[in-house]
Image (tube, rainbow, N blue to C red; front, side, top):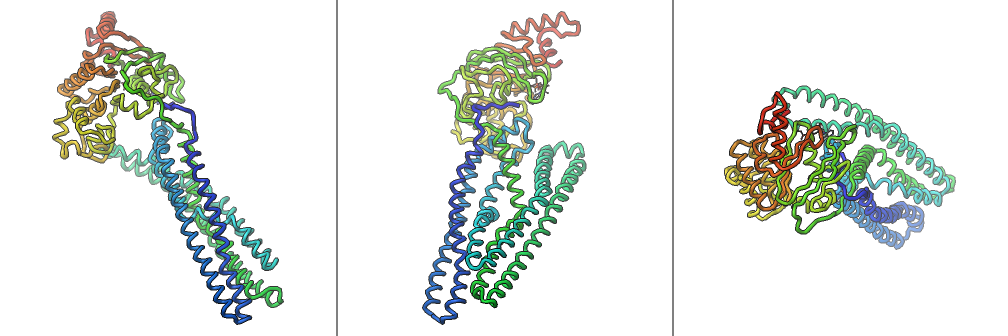
Length: 582
Ligand SMILES: Nc1ncnc2c1ncn2[C@@H]1O[C@H](COP(=O)(O)OP(=O)(O)OP(=O)(O)O)[C@@H](O)[C@H]1O
C-alpha cells in the first residue's frame, strides 16, 4: 500500500553509489601504478640475465638491486593504500545507505513488498564485505591487460601474439563461466534468501508451531527449499570448479609454452634469455586476474544479486526528507474525504470519511469487525498514504510531517502492541535516551508504574521478542505508557482495552481523562462499549463508510432508536454493542 512519502525522489541508492565513484577512480589510478611496479621483477631479470651476467659488472647489479628494492617498496605501500581505500569506500557505503536501507526495509514491510525486512540489512553488510574483500580488485587488474600486452610486443612480436592468444583463451573461459554458472548460482542464491525469509517468519510464531505440532510441516518445507538451493549451488559450483581447474591448467601450460617459444627465439638468436624468463613471468601476471575472476565467480554472482536487491528495495522506497515540523502543535484534527484502496484491491476499505476534532476532544470509533477501524488509525498517524483525501493535524497533512517531530507530538497504540527488543524504559521513551522522570511520569499516567516496579529489574527489565515475557494486559499498559510519553497533543489508540481487566480499564479511563484535561485530542477505537463513556463524539464505521458521526449522546440515541425498530436489537448501550459486534 502507499506509504507516507514526502517527495518523489528515488536517488538515495544512486547518490550513495555515486559518492564511491571518485574512490574507484583513485583505485584505478593506484592499480595502474601497481601494474607498472609489477614489471620491476621481470625487467630486473632481463637486466641481470642480459647485462650483468654478460658484463660481470657488480656496480650495475648493486644499482639494479637498489632501484628494484625501491620500486618494490613503493608497490607494497601502494597495495596497502589501495586496501585502505577499499576499506574507506566500504564504510562510506555503509554510512550512506544505513538509514535509507533501514527506512526501505520498514517501507517494504509496511507495503507488503518484503516478508523479510532484515535481509536488506544483511545485503548491505554483504555488499560492504565484498567491497573490502579481494574479489573486487580483479576487474581493475584485468583493465591493465593491454599494458602487459604492449610490453610483450615490445620485447618480441611473437611474445605479444602468444600473450594475445592466451588472454583470448582465458577471457573466453570467463565468458563461458558467466554463461554456464551464473544462472544456477544466482537462482540458488535468490532461493536461499527466500527460503530463509519464509522460515524465519514462521519461526517467529514458535508458540503456534509447537502447540499445533506444525514443526514437521515447517521442516518439510525448509528441506524442500534447501534441496532446491543445494541442487542449484551444486550445479553452479560443479561447472565453475571444472572451468576454474581448466583455466588454471591452461594458464600453467601457456607459461610453459611461452618459455618454450622463448627458448626457440633465443636459440634462433631472435631474443635474449632475459626476455624469455621475463615473458613467462609477465604473462603469468597478465593472466592472473582472469584466473582469479573464474575462481571468485561465486562472490561476484552473489554480490550482483545483493546489489540488485538493495537497489530495488531502496530505489522503490522514496526518500523522505525532513518535512514540516510545528513548534507547538495543538492537536486540531481535520479529516477530509479520506478514502483508501489497498494496492491490488478493487474496492475501497475506507470511503469518504470526513470529520473534525478540536484540541482535547475524544472521539470513539466503533463498528463491526473489518469495518476499517484499524485502517483509519493507520491513515490518521500517517503510516499509510490515503488513496484520496487527507488527514490534517494543525492544518498540516500528516504525511508531510517530519517523522521524528510527528512521533514527539503523537501517541499511537496499535492493535498488536508491538513492543521492541530493549528495556521497559527504552520502549516507553520511543527507544531514545530520555529523562527518567518523564518515563516514570508516562508510566504513572498509564497506571503501570507499580507493575513495572514488580518486574525483575524494574524499568531496566529487557522485554520484546527476546526478553522477559509480559502478559497481554501488561504489554498493553506499557504500550499505553509509550503512547502517553512526552505528553502528545494527539493520540490514536486502537483497542487499548482489549486485554485489560476491570481495574486496567478504569486506569485507562483515568489516563484518558487526564490527557483530555491536558488538551490531548484522542481517537479511541474499541470493540467494547464499556469505555465509550469517556468519549465526546462517536464515529460509527460500517463497511468502510461513515454510518454515524456526532456527539456521543446523539449517536447513542440514534443507535438506540434504530435498535428499537429492530426486533432482534438490544436497547440502550447494547445497541452500540450490537453495532460493534455484528
Ligand atoms: N493491506 C491490505 N490489503 C487488502 N485488504 C486490506 C488491507 N488492510 C486491510 N484490508 C481489509 O480492510 C478491511 C478493514 O480492515 P481493518 O483491519 O481496518 O478492520 P477493523 O475494523 O479494524 O477490524 P477489527 O475490528 O476486526 O480489527 C478488512 O476487510 C481487511 O481485509
